[in-house]
Length: 336
Image (cartoon, rainbow, N blue to C red; front, side):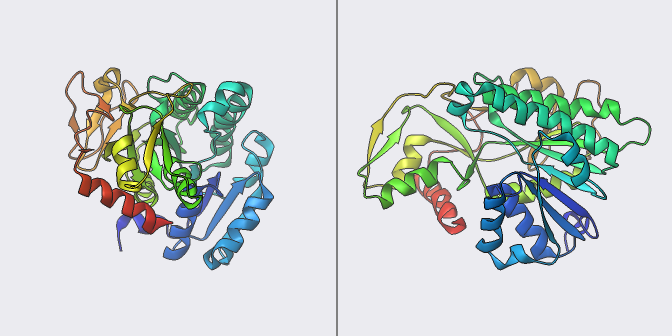
C-alpha cells in the first residue's frame, strides 16, 4: 500500500464543495480505499447531495456524512470541522463570465469563504488543509482569477496565525482544466454532438490550455497531503494542448466555428509566472512555489532557473502529436 494512502488511515476528512466533480472523485477514492474513519461532504445544495447519494452505491457507504452548509457561514463551518483531521477546500464559484457580472458573489464565496475556513480550521485544531487553486490565479485578468489569487494568499498567510503548535498546515494545489469536470469544455462539446450539431464553437485558433484528468487531480492532492510542510503551492507537470487540435481529436467530422475570446479569457494560461521563479522548486512530477523566506524542505528538489515560467503554449509537455491528443480525449471518455 502506498504511503500516501496510509496517511489517511483513521482520519476524518472534510471536503468543501464536496458535490462537485473533484469532491465526488476524491470522496469515492477515499471510500474505496476504506482507510478513513469518516468523509464529510460539506456543500450548500441539498439536491446535489441527494443526486450524489443516488449516483453510485459507494456514496451510501457507512463512513460518509452529508453536511449542509456554506463556506460563507463561519459558524456552520466551525460546527462542521469538529473532530476533523484533514480538509480539502474545493468550494468555489468559478465561471469566468458569471464572475464579471456578479463580482460581489464571487468575493463572498472565494475570498470570504477562504477567510472563514482558515480561521475555523485553526480554532478546530485541524491537522492539514489543502486548498484547490487554478491557473487563472496567475497574473489574473478576470475577477474569478483575482478572487482565487486572493484566496491563495490567505491560505499561505494562515501559517502566521497558527502559532507554536504548528498546525494546521496549509498548502495549495494549482492545476489547469480538468478533463470532464462539470461545466468544462469537453462535456459542453459532447452535448452539442449528442444534439446533432455540426459545428463546435472555438474562441480563438491560437488558444491553448493545460489539462489534467480527475483521477490525476485526486492522486496529486493526496500526494500533497503527504508532502506538505505548509505554504507550498504544488503544481503538477501536466500536458497542454491547442484547443483547435483538441476539437479535431474530439469530433473530427465537426466544423469549427470561431466565436472570439470571451470577456476575462486569456489566449494562454500560466501555472507559474516568471516572478514566482525566485521561489519555485522542481521535483520529478511537479513544481512547488514557496512563500518568501520559507526554506525548501523537500528532498531532491531543484531550484528552477531565474525567469522560468510555466505557460500553456510553451509548456515542455505541450502536445502536438494527433495520436497523443486522441489518447487525451479517450481518457475523458473513459472517465464519463
